[in-house]
Length: 226
Length: 77
Figure 1 (cartoon, helix red, strand yellow):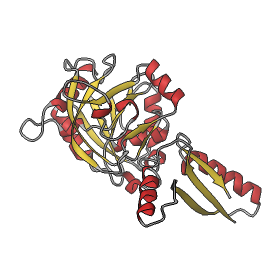
Figure 2 (figure 1 turned 135 degrees about the horizontal axis):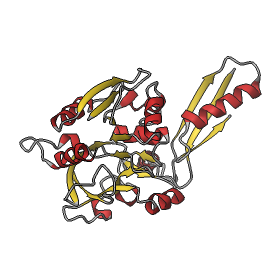
Figure 3 (figure 1 turned 90 degrees about the horizontal axis):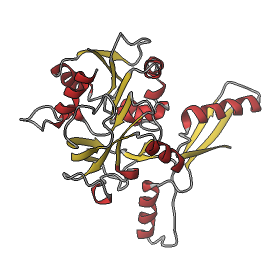
């Protein structure tokens, strides 16, 4: 399986993602934001970081970069596109995913492990994961998911909520909301479930000695589902 | 010509920075400040002498990049 990780000026999780994808069997290639074409891929990843220094709004400048047209074409033809953290912000700014990631409610940069509850397994990203709750890492200043009431209804009706912040038992209530995100949303799909944007970093949880292994479950499922 | 744009958060959208500024002002004895909403201001130099054309171009810029219409409104001055 071939994957492509797009590098923007200011991306800083691109190499971690490269290591993770290769560890679980992807043949990964790195693609520069100013390229016009993406090489043949089964999966495109927009990595975390601070593309263009978060100027204007997080992800807004990257969302207009040269490579993005190919990403949009790939996504619209049903290709799998995964955006992590800043990648999620870029996906909302391109309009591939609804809503926006606003500044965290309490104005703090959050860097810690959290638990997320998988809300929908009828898709390639979570299909074969047996656990209901994953421990993953977040590190962001703008992760406070927001959308209009109508959009939220449509997201809920279409099963587009992918993961929500929760405790280790899966309680996704206000007490377990780190950043003020609407409905504790940590990640969403597009209607067809081929695009996933999420704030938590699975690529940081692939080593039992350093962090944890719930990220491994995510990548193992991904390579098996493709 | 120069076109000026102000981008503000829509009513009802949380503005934590505005809130922090308000609380700081209150702490500095400006205790009659009940709300602050923070926005962005742009000075855009467009090589176009026709004012209407320039402004309609800037309107496109607002919709496509300068404002995110999910949470922001724009005003061309």
